[in-house]
Length: 268
Ligand code: SAM
Image (cartoon, rainbow, N blue to C red; front, side, top):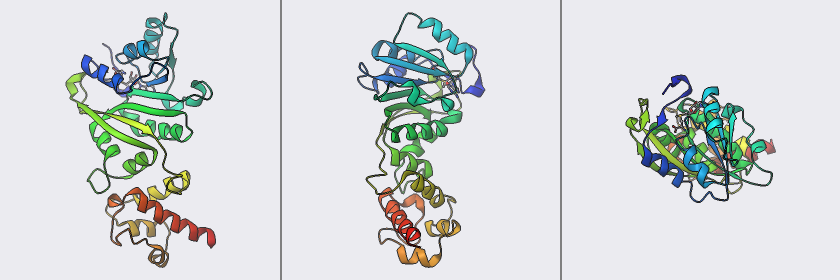
């Protein structure tokens, strides 16, 4: 099997695992499913039989051509040769419908793909996703506040989706084997911005300020971002210890702090 390491091409060869990934999406008989990076079709083959409509996005021209030929007699399968990061997901999904997403991701662009899916979740065009990624990244996405792996990626992900870690695969599940273990996550997109009383772009930017430097306290990161010590002292919520780092704070108190700071910014 020819593969292009630069495109993250490690193909799944574990039969039980490819079934488990598709099973994790649940009943898709009435669903449009978008597959990211179908490769040689390990997941595509099973999905094509189960879902109403499958749109598979593959950047590699030779692989896209191989799959287009292979699924030529299955009208519910559409192979699109495209960079997933450039694809307009809303144009692929029938108007008024939501889609589910599946993929053994090309690991080199995992964060960018997640950000794209969170934006699609906010627009209400994707409902669920089952995604395989490098284990360390999956651990960060699903970590709770206060544990070592919790950081900006965790906070951003958990503002956008409920996340369940499903299972981990060794390098031997792939050909060629990657250098890392891989974990499958299920994401149920459910943006929390409205519930927490914050606007999405403003709160995303605020989180980036809060987590800017891991060694600094939350207060020091916010001072570095331009908030004065006096403002912070006046508005600091009782729910956040003064010397806390952002990594230990849950999203609810973070939102409380953001609301307090933005209310003052508006009144000045
Ligand atoms: N789904 C297959 C499997 O499980 O065996 C292949 C998974 S492989 C880890 C990642 C796939 O993503 C490869 O087929 C690769 O060509 C494709 N890919 C890489 N970059 C991409 C991009 N920017 N847009 C779409 N597909 C991409």
